[in-house]
Image (cartoon, rainbow, N blue to C red):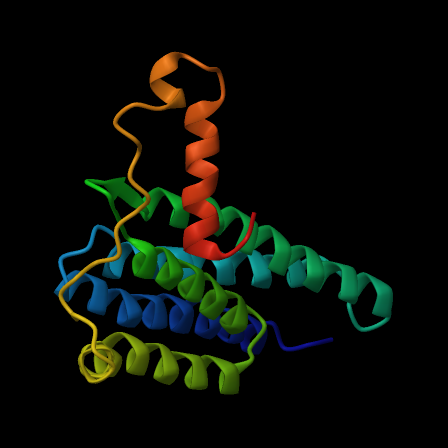
Length: 192
């Protein structure tokens, strides 16, 4: 019979660390005045860890290798798909610019950190928090310097494809707006 106290403490540690690392990443977003900050990313990470821990609590993983593989796959796919919708809500398009991409990406990282905490993959948690904070804190001035070094304007934001003053969309052709949006997505991502 396993020691329930040790198992409960282990689960609480996983959940607590998940909330803590999510809030640590979210602190950077708060400092930069972004909508998703410490509380939001702490909850994202905690929720992802809760899903991972809860899934493992109710399945006998020691004897069923196939069940374990399907469970891990289901947890990861489910959490990351759901978080994609939350991250998409952080992306704003206006005035020919796109804002919120880094915050959306940070939301995915917070969810990944939560899953890693839920699976007790502590080496991945530590390495990911360090790399994430380096990217968010150290890299912005390095990025600006590199852009300047290669002849770019670090203060210029890439503009989206502008809609033509007279074009298909204004002539009332159905689907013209969607086609224009597809070109913008292709330009931003490289995918059709």
